[in-house]
Length: 98
Image (tube, rainbow, N blue to C red; front, side):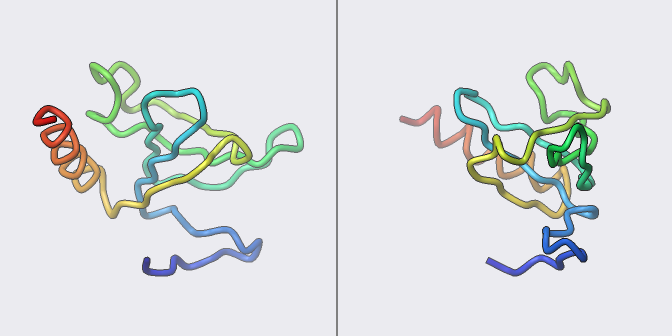
């Protein structure tokens, strides 16, 4: 995996990326576009915008979203929402063939 630039805190710089995060107990991953790090109430959050087309029925596309970093089990980094959607179509196609 190509290393991402880090900011002064040692956390990856995702500001020009789209990040999909997995959270235990949730079937679907959460996707954030151009996320940044924020401390809220003493907790670290990844905060960005939900890309259009990246939520079920696009019900939250274009709104702000945040994920508590300690809740994340893994993440994937994409160059754009278009790349994320392209990869998601590949995944959905393979899932249907099972």
